[in-house]
Length: 91
Image 1 (cartoon, rainbow, N blue to C red):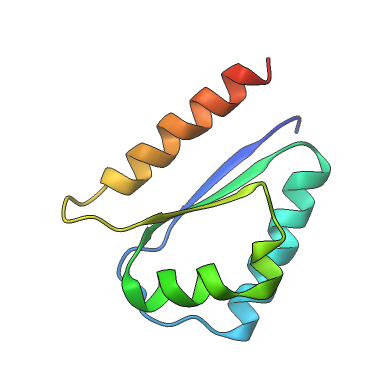
Image 2: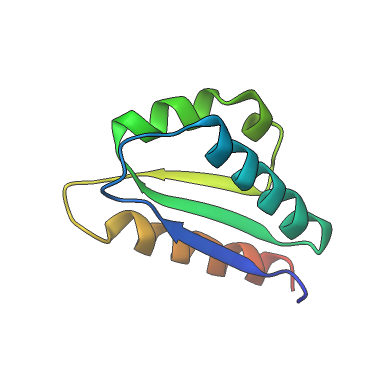
C-alpha cells in the first residue's frame, strides 16, 4: 500500500502493557516505511496517559492519539477527518 491510514479504536480498553506498546511501535514503523500513518482513537484516561508517555511511541510523527469523548465515535470521526486532510495535503 502507498500512504495507508489505519485507525484503531480502543474505547473500552483500560490497560496498556509493554506488549501492546511494542506491537503499536512495530506497526507504526511499518506504516511509516510506506508513508502511512497510524491513528489510535477512543483512548480513555487509563490508556491515553501511558500511551502519550511511552518513550517508544513518542518518536513516531506518523502516530496520532485521540482521547475518548463523551460522544461515542467522536474521536474516531475526528481521526478520520484528520487522515483525510493529511492525505489531501500530501497528494
